[in-house]
Amino acid sequence: MSSSLPLILREEPFFDAIEVPLPEHVAVVTMEFPEVQLADLPEIFDGHFHVLAEAGPIGPGFAIYEGDITDEFDLTIGFPVAGPAQIDGADNGAFPTGQALIMSHLGGFDGLGSAWETLMERHFAKGGSAPRAVVEIYVTDPSVVEHDDLRTDLLVLL
Image (cartoon, one colour):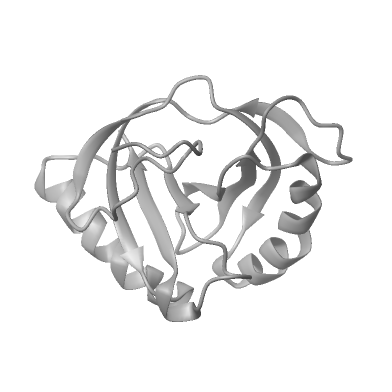
């Protein structure tokens, strides 16, 4: 069962890691942050997601991580949108396509590290190589959903 909102790939969480095709032609508005570290994330998310929200999101926010997240990496944050947006510092583009290994994390953001470890273990156990990028889709909105009820879909782009 697919949701009507872009980037919610199904209503039910993905309790096991499975490979899924990503939707094509999902227009997004994004901001890019080169050479960041994990400690920078709260400031980036808190300081910029609300600016991107001015574009009128039609689905959940996301973050794309490229590089070694234990060191410096490039970060792109964004939302799916109905059409191009004119926001200072933002770019218009498309969400990545192709295949992804996906698994959902239920609970607060503080548990994402262990969820990522589990997904990456499964990715490598299936013979996967270092991913070109990983993605978090924030299926539920932390401003309206209780901490313990949050759902974040984790994707390894294949």
